[in-house]
Length: 207
Image (tube, rainbow, N blue to C red; front, side, top):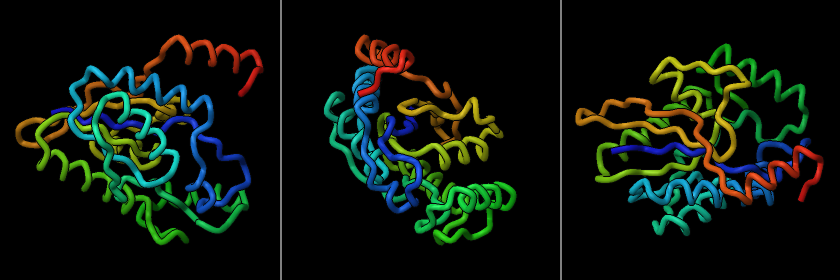
């Protein structure tokens, strides 16, 4: 059994939003192209189940992927992102809270959750699927909780330049005793439309 951990595709959330507002941001045009290329790449990986975080950018990513691989999506609230403070739009405040959560991952944030408890729920979801599902699983979730889980399970501590990119896939193989082995990290699928749009963006043309 293989569990494919997917970070949602690029979203339209502008700077200056609070965390609550960010949950409502959908995919950008570029993100839609990423999700289509992702679905094409996942189509031949024998995925039997696909689960999504309930946050809009993840749901929209999963909808595009599920249409292409022919598997109905299911929502799982345990796959949601870790948020710091739902109300503040103060960037310095958010930065300070982020540093606090990094230094003390058990500290409860104004959102009502600690970093470690957010990682706990993602790990619980993955272990439940590993135990109860027969077949490969795709999970569309978020960077912070996924990077935290990879650090916990495999002692992988990536710097910012190596963080999971949007619409990337990290694969975990589940052994018979339900132990995890990482097969690959941060793999991205591309097609001609996505490559062309990436080039346009590098040249300063955006849609």
